[in-house]
Image 1 (cartoon, one colour):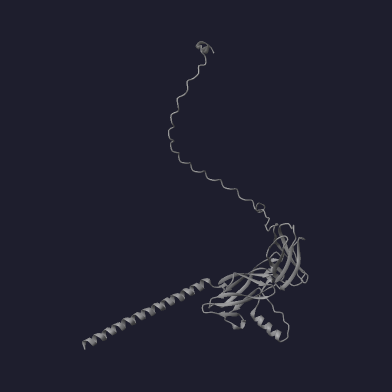
Image 2: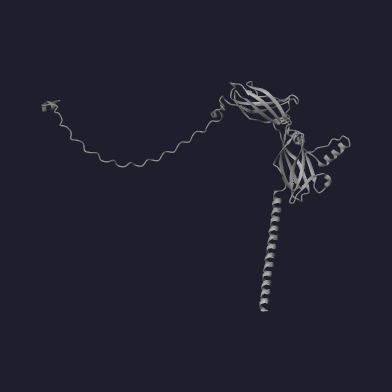
Length: 333
């Protein structure tokens, strides 16, 4: 009987110890999760709001969306264009700031679709400043909800080519910035390969925008013969070119011309013609004078040599010949 009681007591003690361990582990997990959640909240409050990309490249005259990442409790978001820079086309900065990049009102876009369905005509006004009320579904704001954040999609449209600075202010407190670059509808972005050799025919690929079968290509000299131009799509041209023997080495400007649009674009130093034999033929000294060399350090003095072995005694000299038999005569001389 006593043995059974001891066994029961032992079992109870083991169960009690196990329950205590489970409760302690659960409490520790809850504390760790709470700490992790608080850390995530603190991190989100420090990093947000922020635009998804620091730089957004958009096509001219096309509607594009840029993403703004927000905290879950964000309510009012004011988005505005606060800066504009010309890309060398001579467009006035004030004109760019007012009219170059438009922020599209989502509510007006919804009305525009309804107006089109009804067969009516109405001009939808675009603005460079829009305020989004995220708590009012009637504003038509496009918001994607996530667990720890939400994403507001801001639709913009480039009217004039340039570089723009867009600012977003959340609930009148925190602000963040992004850059929007609008690209021209007819442009030359690059050419590949960019190196050709005399006496060889090369197929070149031109990348840009607004390219078609009427687009003409010019390399600025008569020593490069264009044998074929093939338009693949709006952004790609295949050009077969032959560099004549004896063509001078160096860079060539690449120009594309659109008779349809009445526009031309030049990529300065876009193509390099090598010297005969495939060498670039460029003297580095002509590009940049080298810096004078540094004076070398004096070498260390050498160690003293070991003493040489003593020389052997020479053989006895021969008897000298008398110069004069008469000593007196010798002294007079």
